[in-house]
Image (cartoon, rainbow, N blue to C red):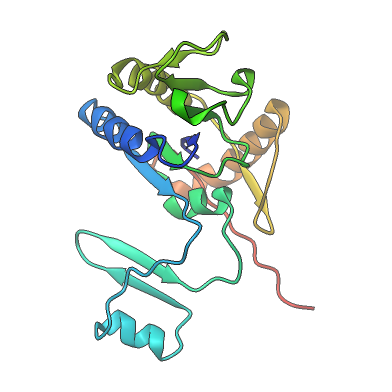
Length: 216
């Protein structure tokens, strides 16, 4: 999976503005970027009268829209999706996924801090970086919101390093399972040994295997 980084901060601290600047800067550098935004309120992307709206109103619990330029999934859920599930939905093909919110996730975090809003949400030692309008007495890298170039440099280095590193991820019943380096190496060798001959002349760049067990 691509590198994912969460941008957190208090309300009106400038998280979305920072993300907007970072997306633009990193895209100019040629990176493929995805963005995920958390919202605590309900939302609706559909429009009354449209075909997709009619299908949803008829009872379809998921509607997928596809065109030569875009695709979209509108799905009713009975619980909030985890950030890991959203990353899986975003799919491969990205160098970096920028996530707004999900402060309780295990993702590396950048906190946006404004002096007038009081203290930090997280201890600096638990942060990848701080975007702040005042100096914080901590060794955590600190950046200005007015110039995203240096922060983009950091994220670009991390994303490109991740691109050069083989990774195996495992999700069981929708829950990510942490794998150490040795386990990842064993699984990778086993899968490539079995499946490379099936790929023919293609170089295996990524694999996705899904097992759905029938009901007993």
